[in-house]
Length: 255
Image 1 (tube, helix red, strand yellow):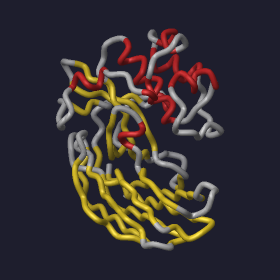
Image 2: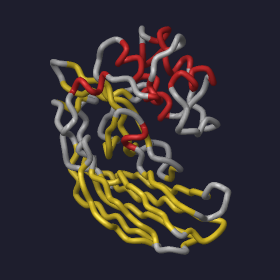
Image 3: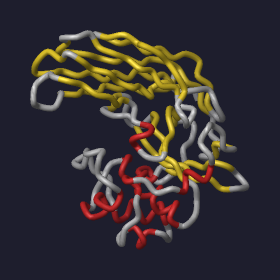
Image 4: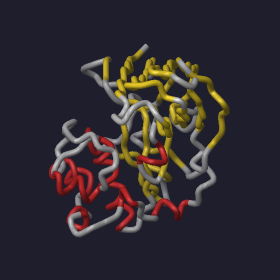
């Protein structure tokens, strides 16, 4: 399946910002089950300083913005061909050893409530943690999200990863895109989890949709949790006391 993606993340600041530096993990790579035919990143109000691969083999663009900006935007467009392999990604690669994916992180640490989810994992998570966009705080841990009782795809992935690691499976967070059958316009990218099984390699689990990734999914970045695979992260100085106003527009459609 050939997917066409147009993704824009824009920021508005209440006052001119003297310094902004961002890391972008927004560039998918050709790998098992997906072939990137074209991909372009354009920055309004800033420049790309350099491009490198991180420890998870994600492509990272480091961008800086012009001093005094009040509006910035990052535009991504491209075409990715994806084949359905029932969520199986294959053997492990990259610079991070496989055992590291068994390590608990701050966002995926197991507590008392997490231990109740170790059986019938994916279906049970969705049952006790309904999908809800009312929870949009990326800093909440898996245990905090369970106490809240609702979450988005990012939260489902963290809970699944925490439980999988607790029972001995290496697990990682995946950020990317999903072509929805019922809509082209979206307001956010997608996230899911992958677990490593010795005989098969990495296998994807999309808890939010109750399935393994198929030809509608584009993998962009992986990490131990959201912080290592966030599409945009960085720092700024100035721009007013209030947080910046961020807006995301996204189109994912079949060509």
